[in-house]
Length: 264
Image (cartoon, rainbow, N blue to C red; front, side, top):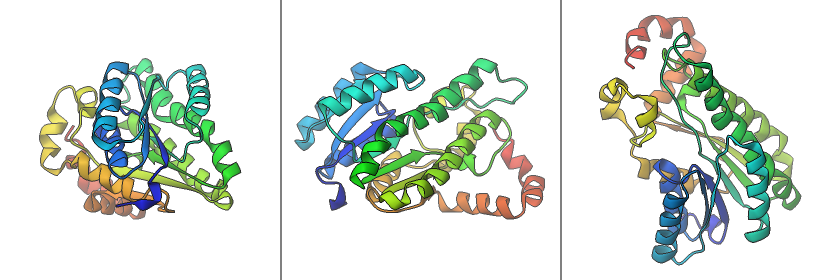
């Protein structure tokens, strides 16, 4: 049980499904007050009602597409007025499309960066001034092992997650003196509906299904480090070892792992 988050306001983007939903439920189970953000208001309403019924905590929800920077400003202003200060922001909204650079469309590129990078940065900027002023807060950015180890057919997605990691690592140092924590979460494939869009052929899921992470376990691990100065969560451990080896010996890894990398 993470007693540090009892009574905290935890805002989660992309909360209508996948690990966003799991994180919201786990936060409520541990006495925090989730604030849910996503595009699907019907699903958010259903989840908020479930959380309030099962865990007796408040649970606000707001419909928001993080591609819309004007809507981000408006929504976060409403949250500040209606709920108050945010203690933990989990930037979970994101998506991927597995495609080669030559075949990917410019619209796919634009959408991935608007959601995965620009929406994440904009949401962070909305809560940072209050956190810095109060000298209390935690930004948790859901990145990916793809941000550390790029593979074929994920060039645009990997690029967006590289950007998230670069932003996260710089931000951590910028706000350290203000006692604001910044954590990057780098999971491998998780058993969620992410792949309904990312892997429409089903080939990648078929090849990695036995190694997929349990979303409940991932959510529990994320919630367990809230309001602590944890730098990164890397899951699974063996995959992060591969990412580390790539940083040390990129030529060797690319030469011998190319067959495995192409299984998308």
